[in-house]
Amino acid sequence: MDNQKGKGLSFARRIYLPRSIGLAIGCFSVMAAIYPLNLSTWVWGLLLINGFIWPHLAFQLSCRSIYPYRAERHNMLIDSLFGGFWAASMQFNPLPTVTILSMMIMNNVAVGGPKMLIRGLLAQLAGVLLSWLLFGAAFNPDTTAIQIYACLPMLTLYPFAVGMISYQLATKLAEHKRTLRALSRTDSLTGLLNHGSWKDLLKISFQHCKQTHSTATLVLIDIDHFKRINDTHGHIVGDGVLRELSNELKDNLRVEDLAGRYGGDEFCVILPDRSLAQAQEIMERLSQLFSNYRHCDEPELRASLSIGLAAFRPEYQDASMWLNEADKALYIAKNTGRNKISLGAADTLMDIVLSKP
Image (tube, one colour):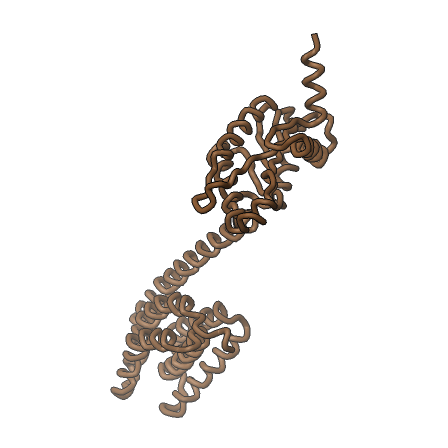
């Protein structure tokens, strides 16, 4: 139960406005129904307290409770108790009774489902029995025009208020869902696409190139000697280097370019509608900018990039073949001196063929 402490304040705030509106306008429905019955003055006082003071008192009780959510559910049972009491006190006058009890049943179902519905019905029954004990059991089937008019605000304004609250809640939930979806697709350190999301987009990009015969270039980037940076300068500095590269990618790529963190110190980029030569020019500029990075606490730190490029080729059977070609290019860059840009074997061969006289 300790994990419920302090939880439910937002729930209490959401309930506060509908309860204030519902009980206030419901009070007039009950007034119209009990006026001909000549009940005692204290009954009218209790009705005014229930309609205009209880909503604010209930809110304060929830806010001051150690367990706000549980306190608010208790408050709703008190609402049901009063509802049953007023239904019996106005001798079950059909329209006001149905109006008040149905609204309370709707609230209980919305808050706690069938379990809360049953508890609410039992509370209403307790209110009925209390009224019968005080005033006796009676039934008045006649509803006057004044009583009908008195119920109209309850039948219109209260559903409107509940609908607005539901709309705001649905909008907020949708916003949270979008945020969670974005977080599930994003690498927490760099803010780029994470491994799984980027690979999903790689498959989509591959199919797009295949179907539309368009061009695109795949880029794999590795930070040279990143383990040495971590071992020498610490992981905090290493994280700063990763963030610096991600920032350079965000600043120097187009909106439609898809950059992600493949894992560790490896990054990946899809450049739609970019030829191999264009991609090489972009990566050379990126590499130069990144080499100028200096850490404020480690001024001697130097960092460089090894980069592998692979253009889309129609003969690739799937996205993994394209990715494998870029990985081979990156391997060449890392094993032939680092701090360079290499092309995939297929792209290198094509360049040789095209360059022959």
